[in-house]
Amino acid sequence: MRYMIRDIEAKALVRELQRRGIAPDERITVLVERGENDDLPISAINQAGGGFDWLDEEPDLYSDEDLVERYRSP
Image (cartoon, rainbow, N blue to C red; front, side):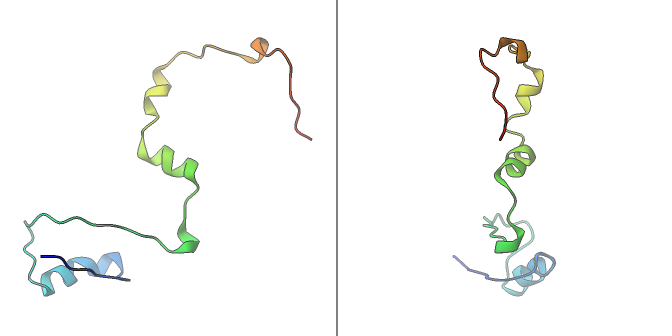
């Protein structure tokens, strides 16, 4: 069975699921959409996700001395 619960505070979600008769041990899928003002920059999402953590263990192969031409910001 499918239910759609829209525009609910996170702290009220458990109570709403109980009201609908969904057991605490039942498996559910949750889609979270945050408000426009709460959007995180993509770099913060990537960092929080941990998908690039493996790069911390990789050696730095290049340095500033390897640049052929240096670029300066205007």
